[in-house]
Image (tube, rainbow, N blue to C red; front, top):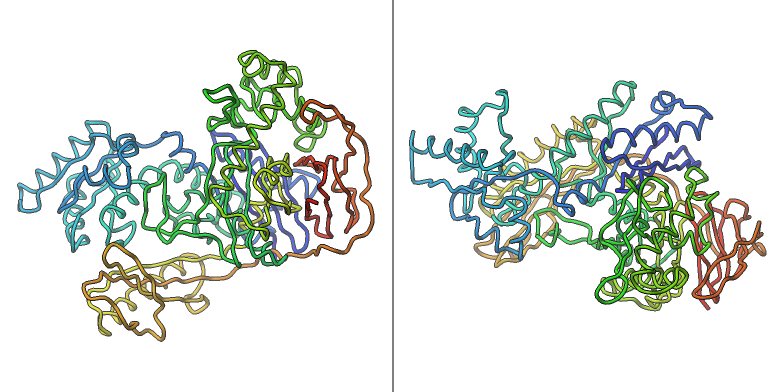
Length: 640
């Protein structure tokens, strides 16, 4: 088996994890938002250097079976409202006002579409209808739309949308310079809910250009290196697929889903019945839940609180991270959601940032070591951090810098803990998994504030979402409407889906006979959705009269996954401290023992107060907390 490369592209840092049998090599690089392919290749160069001792990217790629990639760029684009100006052409019963009113989406509709909507009257025929369609496209493009969505409200959407498509392909052929891209809602998803299907198409149209430009650039550069396997995109459904076989909406929130797949794997490995994941990056904290082995998933996911047609992992992304801007607000100190990202970054990075962040605060409090931060590759500047906190927090509040440090940490901890409690019911059985570059920092205090007494810090915490991508397989799902609830209609729909699946999996490089197939029936009735398995290709009993039906076929091909090892409880004595560090806790400075994770034997343990540190994360172990490091490098913190 060859190597597996997983890459998770975040707003501040890009994480790279290379799995080679039982060996895992991980590294990080600053995200380059002006050209994502640069940090993509920079990460591969760093990984190759770590493995071979030299910049041998070609050797790394030629020895690799699969490259899986995830990104938060789509999520960030929607959060920042930076992207395409959309136009929408509606037919049938669907109106722009319905889209605007649905699910309180007026603000989002006004940002993405605004007044760029047109309605075609289907009662018009012949040349008059052609002229109406042409006028609609010209009007929307003149109003600033650079991408259009066509959606029909009511039955037989395929037929009506295809009617519009045939006209617009003749009048605006794609090969002409400046031809505006047009997306048809039924080609994105076969969802009977018109409003939900149209919003899904709108989101896809908004995300598509940015994702396409970067992903095809990255794949082109990989092909120039003669890589054997295509770039695989990790999707928000927990599976992977080729770039050419993935739609843009499937990349939304795919990075956090990688963390959830890793969380599910470690929960099963250690027998945690209830695991909360807390992935703290530079810009956001992503909170998820694994309960009895299942990741919390919504059958109809939500993007910006607007329901879409596809399932989505129920992960809450809170605007708080290591690079979040901290400043005074109406009710005290405000943390985020604005972030300085990687450019210019926190003030202490010395890259031009002047805002105060928790990274600056924890540097001044002594928790972060300027010489070892980010594996020693990024030197931190205390003077710049002090100046930013003094100007932006201490002086506006009329307090000293040390008082500002304590207040900043308290506000940062409180915001994360409050969101943990708001999202998930915490019980005595709850374990908190803390990962991401900033996840372990002050996790003991976060856990106490949330009422949790057990914390898991994975040994690959700093790149855990990237590691989690490795638990995905190559999978595609196909859906077709079922005209009637009878055996003949079902047979016809299944034949169509099998043909589509055969072509789709062949494009991935596999025969359909090699894949695991599952079929189900999607039932929409009285505004509710239900899914029932199709056992032996037969319809289930109890289908409601008048229900709208569709058949779903899933084809999955398993690919190699990392193997988890390690157990807790085999204590092997006290952990060895390599040094001491002067750290501010509240208003008091203390000399704390520093434990380097890499220096500890399997089963080593110790109690706080102390500092636990490795190349890419630092953790303050508070009083009454105890840590144990097992043979896989995973760390269990217990309170009491």
